[in-house]
Picture 1 (cartoon, rainbow, N blue to C red):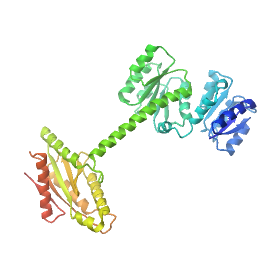
Picture 2 (tube, one colour; picture 1 turned 180 degrees about the vertical axis):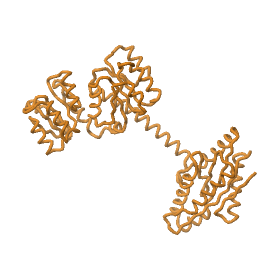
Picture 3 (cartoon, rainbow, N blue to C red; picture 1 turned 120 degrees about the horizontal axis):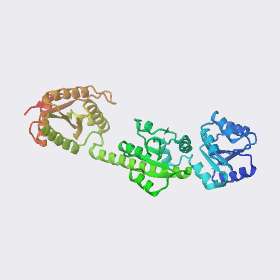
Picture 4 (cartoon, rainbow, N blue to C red; picture 1 turned 90 degrees about the horizontal axis):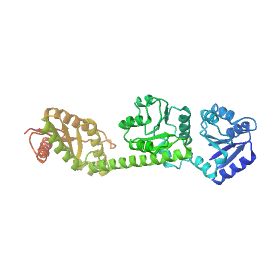
Length: 423
């Protein structure tokens, strides 16, 4: 990383040079704002450190110039021997990401700041896709927290100064930072209302109140953490990262479990439901139909002359045919319907709340769509036959067997057609 340090004192420049080079980064220095902009124009600078007293200007004036320049997105921290709330507020308003007293600056602390910009941190990278809301009636605190996040390249941060604005928002955030003392309503009440809709979000309260009973009550009310004001930027970010890591790991685990659950009921080749699941689903839909007095119909489809497809074109083309047909069938049925691979080149389709007359329309739509399909093998044409049946009072095995009898009849009658069995 290329780091530019603007400082009038040679001693401070030498000390900072040692810190920067010791942690493996390229150091550039300037005594004045004019020199600084010259370096910015000629070098690709990723990080700026500036003092308040420069040879030709002030740190405040430099920050104002940076804010109006092409380099306004380059993160800058102010390193100075002077400290006051008024100066801090002004510099934060000018875009400084932090304000550090020289006596407290160490190589370890500088390294922590610089490492925040390196892309090695997987948690930070993933946090850049997360939405964050900050609620505090202090503009200075809002700016400070937003700058801390921006220091780490996290820019999807919305700030609120009024609780009602956040509570009325339709947007649900992954991370909430809430002040405990707010006008008109307490941060605890905001927490309780947010937790009703944001069950899995990270919610952290901040306050200068340090009484253990207050903190205990906040954590018992559903807050993930409580951070005392004033807070150190690196400690604040470390706490946020720790909670985000757990949030991301939990989310990844839930996604992995969902994928495993999906794999357990999905046919690997066609990506429709597998044999076990589709048969179990027939039983479920039959029970539901009996309970609510509804109709349910099923189809058993079979690709005509599929063995010939494999023999003539090979199994790779055969697999393509199976995948393509499964995809077409899924797209043709409703979301409440189910398509599964019953076995080999056979597909079972379940049509809840559908009598046999309505099922005939669906069956013909599927059959004609398959007949019109094209494949990578241009001369290849495929047809499919089906047997349809409406559930009356059979068992699942009997219902599927009846559909199979309809399929046999369709094949016997010349293929590329559907036959229907009415008990």
